[in-house]
Image (cartoon, rainbow, N blue to C red; front, side):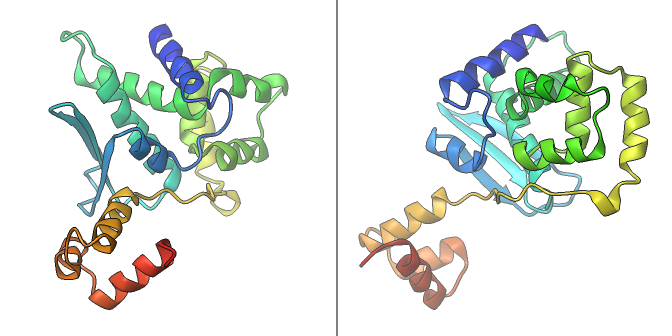
Length: 220
């Protein structure tokens, strides 16, 4: 537990986020050299990660429309890529540690503690944290368990309340999508390294749409 908290704190400092929200998470990770792919699969598939030689790869399911959960899934998979575990640990425990890593990356303990100066965390406070840091309310409550502010009994009690908050929920407003591949593809077309037809086959769009996208991105 302590090592994961320290790792997330180290990475946030190294990547110069410190206690700030991580906006455009997918684009940031792509710029680091992580290959991220969106797939359209049955909803029981959430995501996966692996190393292909020295290249880290993360895949997630775009059927999950909840941006906060997408961000959490990607960071969970990043945890699988960066951390190694004792082989005697059960898979369920490894997942729990990777979830802890994702939560700590999205919502540092120091930041959360700023909100704990209140006697109780209200729905408005939870929504404010969610909309600012791009983390689901369920993940916020689990973070509260991780830092020992509440126990699991209180967590389940609050989750029951959360289910009745449908009319009051807010969403993370910053979109999260993969675009580095498209950019590199459009650039390759513009520099005549591949043909329009080949590019259209790769992204499965008509030539007219491809031309329009290139014109939007690049200044003539």
